[in-house]
Length: 236
Image (cartoon, rainbow, N blue to C red; front, side):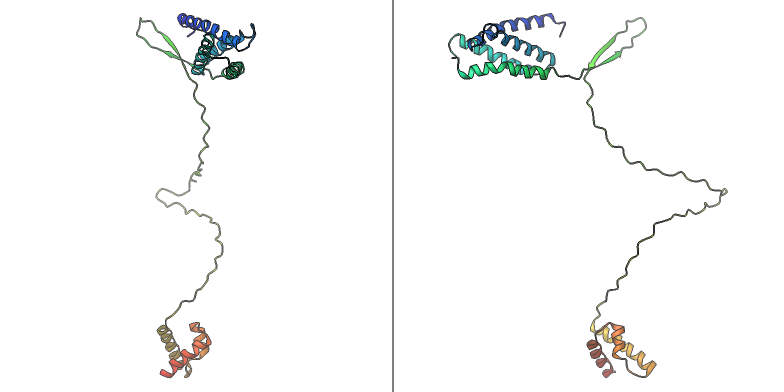
């Protein structure tokens, strides 16, 4: 764009045309003769900064159109000089100062890339330089966990012999408590077990099974054991 003479000539002509209208509007809003000249100068600087940074170009165009239209409307008497118009024109310098400051902040410069074109023998080789935008900075990813496998230890065995067994030491397991839960038995099972115990007692002692033996073997209360013994002994 720096070498385009026609483009810069058109830009200079537009800024000169707009500067007259911008000066007239500032003077109509109460600016002094010399202070009013600062309004078009500030707008011109804002326009050049936006074109150079390639940002805020649309906003600059809108501001220039609005100021130019307002100046001509005031000149022909179609727009009165009101409080809102004076406030708007007075706000232009500080707003332009803020935007020019933001536009002048450091921008990442494009990275030149040199491309070498290989041509046949006898032809003229050309080196083309292009500019690419800087690569975006990506956050570093965390390294994945590494699994270290120890190398195998060579054994003294011969060919065909089985390798020596590898002994691995495992951490001792914590002691576990064994809890025995009573299993509920049906009445028929209790009677069958009681008859078996009674037969064994009669065979070994020639006496019927005792209430204490039924309590210990079948996990019964004294009342349950008494009723079960009466039922088994009386029927046997």
